[in-house]
Image 1 (cartoon, rainbow, N blue to C red):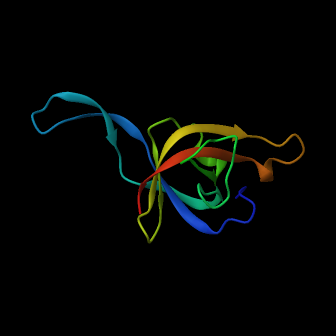
Image 2: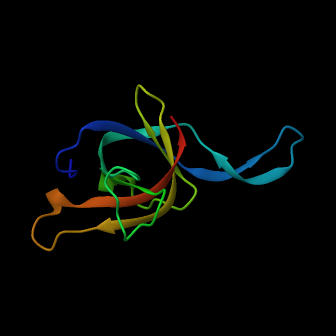
Length: 112
């Protein structure tokens, strides 16, 4: 596990193509939460204030095994059901030790 100081468990719901109730193919269907792994809230809007992300965006750190993470995917907190919709995700790799690699996720709070 690469997220330093993980304090919650997150699952990833990937956005995929699917079908609606009428059998028509649609984009943007969220799959079931899976790939549960430790994670961390790095920045919260209104509490931590991060000029790099702008107002309203949360910053999460997630396990690199999730990579790739795409805009529109959703990170879900185990237990509470709190969820964040991914706006942007970057894989942050260490030049010295892969044990500290993580995914930096900028996201908006979807529920919770």
